[in-house]
Amino acid sequence: MNISQAVAKRILELCNQNNITVNKLSIISGVTQSTVNDIVNNKSKNIGIITIKKLCDGFDISITEFFNTQYFCNIEQEIY
Image (cartoon, rainbow, N blue to C red; front, side):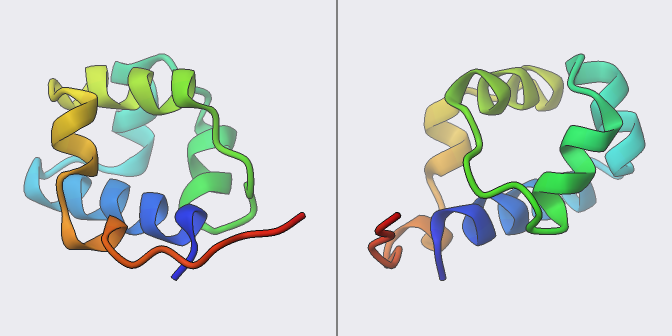
């Protein structure tokens, strides 16, 4: 799994845990719906930390909580 895939899985997991849609997340986080959709559909390969921070604010969690999951333990090295 690469970092983009891990971020997408984590966002979808948190949406399910919080019983919110991706659209609702975009509204409460201030990140455009197209950006959130691109992330969860693995169309965005270079997700900025500021975007992740805004999404964390929407979930009312810290960045540490966001990355504190097995998804990020065995990330593949990405070379561009």
